Structure formats: structure tokens, C-alpha cells
Length: 180
Image 1 (tube, rainbow, N blue to C red):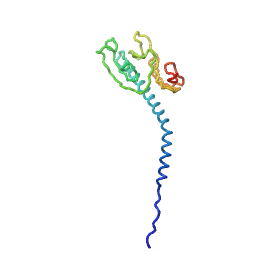
Image 2: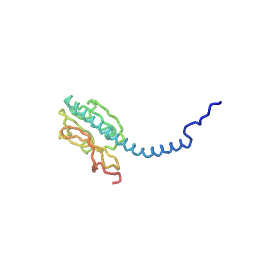
Image 3: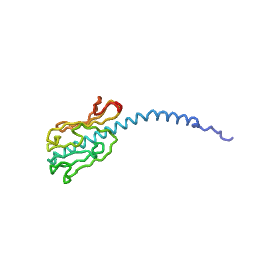
């Protein structure tokens, strides 16, 4: 007696097309959420990188007992920054001053510093941020995103403490939307 032939169990082409269609709809729903998550993670990574650079400049100033200057590359903090030890007292323009760090970007972030931080930030031998006229310095870097009600900030206190915060209120430097 011949062995009985059982029908094959599996998916038909129609079943497979339905599964693919459902997966495509779910992927379409998930993409905007992942895009927002990626943008937020980029802002957080930049905020932490900038805060780390500021803390390193402060540490180097104390360790070397010299003024250490952090300045943006190309005039924009999102392009990166360089750390210079001011050995000559002439500032970062003096080519004899050693550059101890270059952190190159560009980062896909909108960075709006407070006016006193737009060109540079210098830490003295005590780790205190100073203005060129030797005045104390405090300031904020706003990491903006259009059409968002919250944004991250990197805050430098007059004591030199650097922290990363998340604020719910937009500021004049970081408006709520690009149209307002």
C-alpha cells in the first residue's frame, strides 16, 4: 500500500502579502517617532560633548596654572571647538600658544550661545570662567529645535560649574517655532 501523501502546511502567497502589508503600515507609523528620538539623542550627545569640553578646559586651566581658552571653529559652536593654552597672554590669536584639543564637527544642531559666549570662553588658573577684561563670566548655550516646546541648555555658572539642563519654556534665543 503506497504511503499517504499529506498536503504541505505553510503560507500561501496571499498570506505572505497580507503580512508584508501589515508590517509596512506599522513601519510607517514608527518612523516619525524614531526620527524625533534620533534628533533628541543628537542634541543630548552634543550637549554632553560640549559640557565635557568645557570641563576639560577648566581642568587644564587648573592643572597648568594658566588661562585656557575654548573657541568655536569657524565662528559656530556646532562646527566644533579648539582648546588653546594662553601661555603668552595674547589670547588664541598668538600662534605660539599651543592648541591642546581640536573637536571638529559639524553637528546637525542649532546652537545659540548667550552673547558673552559667542566668540570664546576662558578659564583662569582657579577654574573660574573669565571675560577678556578679567570680569566673571556666566552663560548658556541653547540647543534649539524648531517646533519643539523644550530644549537643552549647557549652563556655565560663575564658579565654573558646567551642567546640562532641559527646559520646558522657549526663550528669545530659542523660539518655539521657526515661524514665530
